[in-house]
Amino acid sequence: MSNVTGTAFVVAEFRSEENAETAPLYTDNVVKIWLNEETKRIAEEIAQNSPAAKEMIKLRTKYFDDVLSNQILAGCKQVVILGSGLDTRAARMNGEGVLYFEIDDRATLELKESTFKAHKITANVRYIPGDYVKDGLIALLKQSEFDFDLPTYFLWEGNTTLIAKKNVIFVLEQIRDNFKDFKLSFDYMSEQVIARTTGYQDINDYIDKYESMYTPWITGFESIETLAEDLKLKIIDNFSTADLHQQYRPHRSLESNLFKFYFVCTLENAVGCVSQSF
Ligand SMILES: C[S@@+](CC[C@H](N)C(=O)[O-])C[C@H]1O[C@@H](n2cnc3c(N)ncnc32)[C@H](O)[C@@H]1O
Image (cartoon, rainbow, N blue to C red; front, side):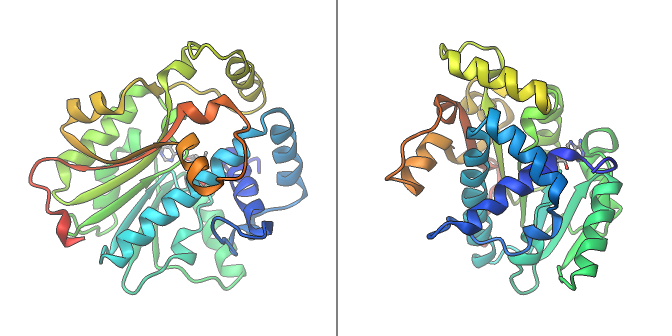
């Protein structure tokens, strides 16, 4: 765990738990290959102090699985996963001719490739080690014989809260300026959470505990509508995880007010969009 980004292991632990539900929101039979006593211990510690984190990860996994699955069903053949960590979708959602490109640091991707190999898990994926901000997303994709003319689905999960706002915007601009035909899904926190202005003390306490054990949350967005308008992007979906919870788990009560401030969204190019080809 020391060489590889620890956050990705905790996400994998939380994601994996859903498999044990009687009616799971999704099935991820691959994720268990990353888990061991150490990842379990760290995830348990975090879950004890920040129980909502687990449920938020499960809700977003279900949403992103559904969007990706619909993209593949509609004929999308090229999927880019930014900050892919231990995401298993390339192995478990592999429609015919669908090629994945995964970007993360070298240690994470090497571990991923070797673990898949050891477990004889196949995935049609090109691993691109690098930093999509410092190295530039487009430069990284160019090194990998990426087809910029093909309709492309970008998944950017569990990243935007952890990187500087100007870098989030830089990534969005790179995608907007280099692809005619794309869809992009990501999750984000409300700016109010980061600024501690939600008015809910339980949320402020939650972040304090979470950040002291895990990693700081530095970026949130006040209004996705404003962001999309500024960047000339079109919003296809925008749901709070409270909305998702209501939809996916209608008989369970919300564990935390934080769900109202944590969102998933899908955007596309507003200009010259040819989305019917997806
Ligand atoms: C919280 S994990 C989420 C992993 C995965 N997307 C998921 O939801 O399971 C964040 C991942 O993003 C990667 N990451 C963050 N910033 C990055 C950057 N600028 N370039 C490449 N990878 C990055 C980290 O190395 C880490 O593996």
